[in-house]
Length: 206
Image (cartoon, rainbow, N blue to C red; front, top):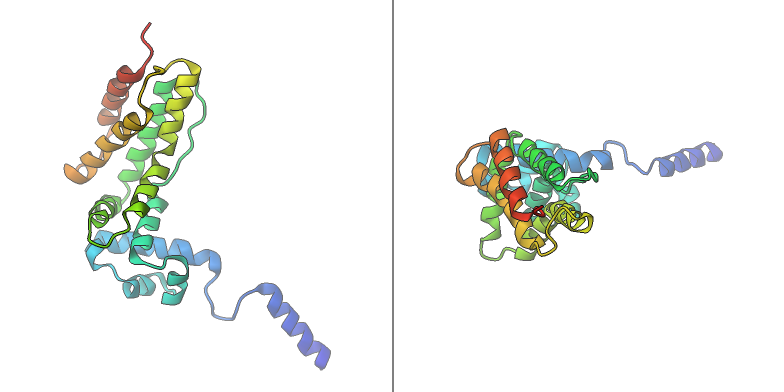
């Protein structure tokens, strides 16, 4: 009897879970999906930890363990939809730039992302906001654009005097403004125009 009880204890330790407790791997996607849905329905200002917990079917402590503040949660939700990406070396800067722009435009067309990004931008300007957190998020999102520019310089098809930081901003900004400022989804025509304009700006001239 004692051995049988000990066996049950050991099996319980092996699972690392308590009965009825949500699986750890389910919490993050459920919470971030809930945030995106709530932002789409109500806007960032109306999203609360209580509402997120209820929509996701998890406890508030489970949320706070991962995201101590609402700001952390909103940024994580944005990054779950528009986060870092990887572009392979295609041997041509324009082709790589097109992949970046097409990937971003596709992500921006997903339901709820427009209001989510508008909320991220607006929240960054609020009193008491930790602006460094937003800056770090955008730095991560723009990392691959900087990488393909630097790779193009090393390869020789991007001008060596190109301002990598400024150009990365010029790649990111038009799609965001079309989505948030003009309230239109960025489409293939905009991507084509940006590839042409930005390609001309930094391409090595024959």
